[in-house]
Length: 275
Ligand code: HPA
Image (cartoon, rainbow, N blue to C red):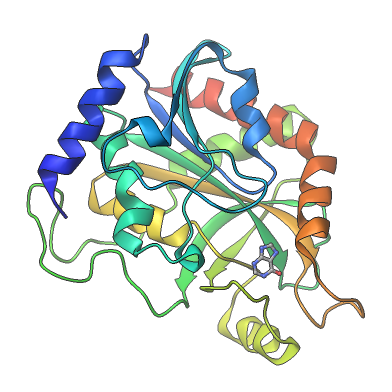
């Protein structure tokens, strides 16, 4: 990956931001509303940032929102890039590189995902404990740039135990049941077949989605502390006797919006206090 492009993009963001963000937030399908809570916000459309890709999927805005989330300086991506849109995984992870270049050392990733574990329910929030890269693609494939990270990054604690503990404390404080599980990345854009879902159950997956894993790999490569939450927007194919649709995904994420917002708010406050 070209370090000069990362630096150019970071410079553009840096000249416009009014606070130095500490935590990066990537907001998934239907969850972009969190960025509307950011105060004293500077909004930068992706199109204004050199080398930034521009997202095409419904339900995703394409802008950075930088400001304070209840007193904590954050940078939120309102709209992310997906492999299924045709982007190379290098493009998908470019914003994470820019965050790191801006001095951000923590990343929280959110997504909508299908429940693979039958004990989950649509509307649950699931803290990601680990992931399975099942998309057949890898953001670090190719020559390694040692300025960005090591050739063979350790992934044994990709989802920070410390950040996860803070998330569970935040959930307990709010009286919420925050589920935990393994997120599987499939490339999409079709949803899975029922047999594929059964296979993911055998593999140890709890939820399946079309994002998150490349960003988390890049963030770990960059030495960032990372964590993720899935909003279980539907049960994966074959678990319930009904077809899946993007509308259902958006509808469910909208229903759990308040709970989700409350959790992230409380979590971010705790992370800031613990530093
Ligand atoms: N499968 C894959 N990705 C998804 C799903 C699903 O069931 N729901 C939301 N994103």
